[in-house]
Length: 303
Image (cartoon, rainbow, N blue to C red; front, top):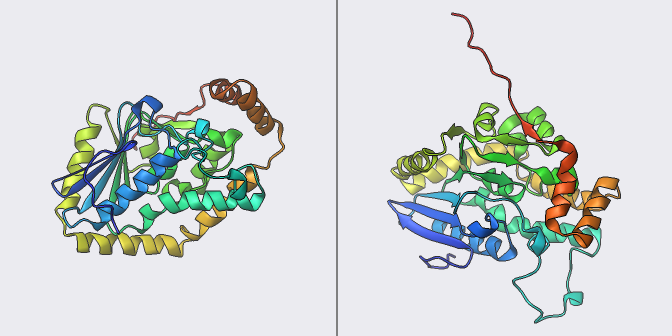
């Protein structure tokens, strides 16, 4: 059941106009990084939009320059910060516990985001600026992804931190490109992402807002019940190709990756503890240089 709200909350804004629910990650000063509170509010907003009779489609975006820069690592992947010490942490599962504890926590995180796959109403993602790590978990869970040409898309955390806990890359761009992106943690521009099918289309940065709004309005002209049949039949086809079942496996493999004793993982954890997030990220990414996929120009076939 929805929360019956139409307002901005601490981390997410929500507005309905022209049968489109505009859900916006609203932490621009943090590049819309995903804290525990952000994930909970987003989950509530998605259910609210799916419940409302005046909504036919959802448009998901980020306030400011970025869509989402990933999970809030200073919040321990969204595990701390917004619930103080009104309970005994030792009485509950924590990320510092066992492998099964880690899997359990990742599955609870998935509960908040994989609902996007199960909603009856379609979701269009509008990406600008950074769409990194957890930002890609959100974007690729949407039904259609539009990006600015200059958007920066990737999962740099794959270099030392783990594998995407929501891993739908294969279903967007196929096995080779999925592996290429995850093996290196490199990023790709919105323009090139459209060329490999990672996003549906890319537009100049000054046009992305209008293009996304126009597509959402066009979709919203179709009755919600009809849209639900289209979404659910295609998603069932994805399920038959393993899309949903593989997400549980992704969470388990991400937890296993967290146990890595390799030098890069160990160095990142050491840097986080001793030098802080900024230097830990800089040291993690330095060996990869610019770390940007650049597709070679493709000449048009001869007539």
